Image (tube, rainbow, N blue to C red; front, top):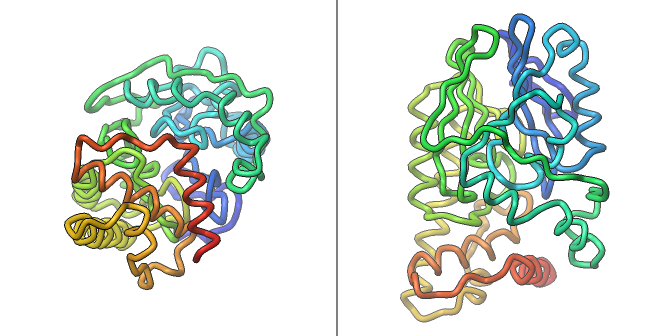
Length: 306
């Protein structure tokens, strides 16, 4: 496995992962699939500074294999806000739902949030000023096979799970999967959408590939063991939340009450708040969704108590 250090890491067979420790809020990963005369970029990071640093680190490869296309694994800004720096003629692929979610949470919204103390607490390392949302030019549902300089790459929609439109990029000839945020390694997964079973099913689908290398959306490069860790966390929180829901406990109290000792060394533990809230909506479909700003406020309060 590649060391977990910032920058570009060669995976072999013309594939690369760009990693951003510590993998916490906003510090996402990206990937590059290089071929003869062209390459595919998977995800474009959270702000223009991060995206420029990444593109500069890839120049030795992209000078001979220019970026001819890109793919956003889902609609969260830390995977697509760098789109505007891509070559104008390069198509950008994403699921149709991911494209919708990009429009629902544009850079201007994050910029406004970052003017507040709450925004700074989560995203203070990033600068959203001047980012213009460049939406995907090619959307798909289900799966899509693309040719990258003679190399086959398959995009597969496995959401809704983490978000409404999660997808992966599988490169069969290199036995590598770029999973987006279906995998958080060493960090707490966060379920904005669900249902949880879809996420568990997505993990099972990733395991079916038997790939030698999995590049997560956040955290170090992993293998099947990282997938199983995510599965165990999701199953545990689902079962514990269900007990408390059935006992009549509120979602906020349940998030405080669940013992996450086995996952205490994972980053961003406060995401239990969102995960329990999403599970409670799943248990009771009539339950109103809590707006994201309120969820961030609740996570900030959870941090103070724990």
